[in-house]
Image 1 (spheres, helix red, strand yellow):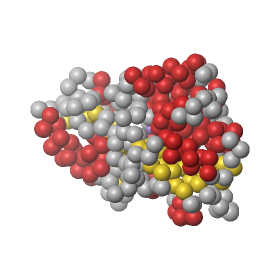
Image 2 (spheres, rainbow, N blue to C red):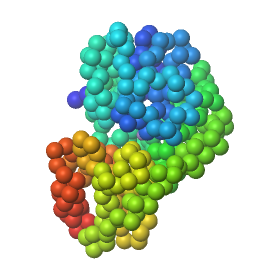
Image 3 (cartoon, rainbow, N blue to C red):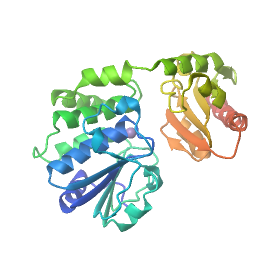
Image 4 (cartoon, protein in one colour):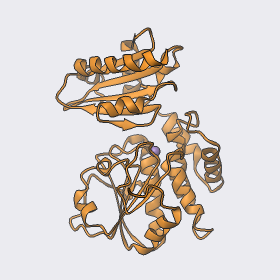
Length: 330
Ligand SMILES: [Mn+2]
């Protein structure tokens, strides 16, 4: 069995030993994934290392404010692949980072840092802490482990705070531990720009996203004794506002505000697949549901994608599975 619990000191050893680094988070990077990629890129650059930061396939508009974002190579691998150390952040398995086989196969050292509940120890150095609110929390602890040699800069603090605040849902999810708040507090003290983070991430929404949200709530249906909320957005819904399936942030968690709703699903018809976001009020573990359909995530927030089936087929298959889950809760 591989070791899932290498110490942060082992991570530091790999950072010191490497010269040419490749860093990536998961596909469709969120605030945690990008925040950690940028903070690590900045740290390694300060250490005098060569770093190639990668994210794919695109970076959302709301995360473009992150300091250093222009340094990320979006969906583009270098012509010459020549890295001694690869750092995968937030990737519960090797495939989560995208088509990186060429990079992964040639690296001497693969460092895997993650906080997902179901995470494989695919690296040579694996630091997997499912008790951490976010990978950003772990990266902050990594800084602390340097014994004062490296403190996060204000820019790195902004990146890491973004990871903590987004993964905890603005400090409301059950992963909002004392440690998460301690780390957030320390990052604010170090200069994290929380005014910009709050304004850009939480108080900015394009007109078409608000309109799409309105359409989604109108289409929301309660099923299974009102314990399951289902929202189906078809291609036509997206076309009505000129929106893309990526512009649905925040929609899936809204139905869990309704008393009695245990599970919420947002089912989206995309050009080549059906993608599903799941949320749980807390009693049901939606990561298990997602895993059944080949996806993954956390107990309260998970998702999956299906190809070759219609949006209606996926909705019915999911509803049948959800029925088993909510029955057990009763
Ligand atoms: Mn995360």
